[in-house]
Image 1 (cartoon, rainbow, N blue to C red):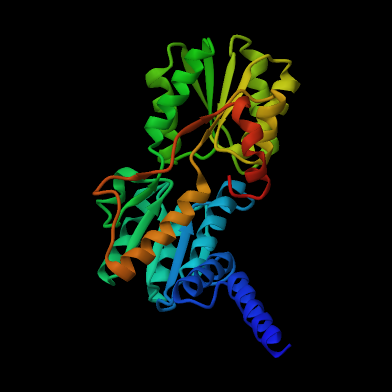
Image 2: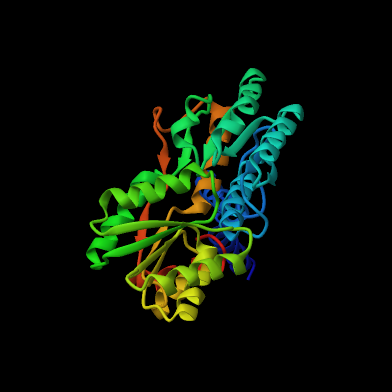
Length: 334
């Protein structure tokens, strides 16, 4: 009986060893790695110093695109043991002041979008003088290196526009409208320029007040009512796609609505056919990679891009891909 109890104890210990994977150095490491991986969603997966990174964007209030960028940045910050500070202003001078404030706080890294680069030049020069590494995101890839940034993370806006022009050609469109909702945004102009470069039809531009959706809808509705030949409308941000759909309905137009950027409403519109296609530049990835690259630079002096932007797009998304992406858009990561 004593021998049975001994062997039973050994067997039980062995079973516990297997289930917990903690009785050998290899099994213990695997279990610990698994626990770290599982915990990375909410806690740091590294033991590097608690560096502080500030992200300052040109987002306006309620812009869902930048919510996704911020979400990606926050996830990477949790993983990398980084204190993450986010601020934004759609007025370029105010955005520059936010960069100055981050420099004054002596943060360990700055992430900034350059929709209106000239207004940010002096502030980024201050950051460089203070020895604070900078990564630009989303807008301003052409000025990024000249302004002293380590690299730029985003899509090439001209290339993205060219992809839209080619897609419009494939769909047999003849007259398209490019709707610009933020005057002075160089990235928006580059998108429309890119469309014009490859589109075989006629492209017109419509400047609207992007801070007021009713104004956007009324301006677009009036344009579609007076120009029945327009068979495609390209909006430059996901929140404006649904407004364009409403304007088309009000104008009694049959123009296809296409858009830059992706969110849950756009994915639903692609699936139900109210939208034709979307250009995804993966905003979650822009935020995540920007933070991760600053961590790599601080930890190991690593850089990516070799002097060229780290591209996150463009990817043309149609009805065929919408269903597969729906779960990601619902959780706010696409």
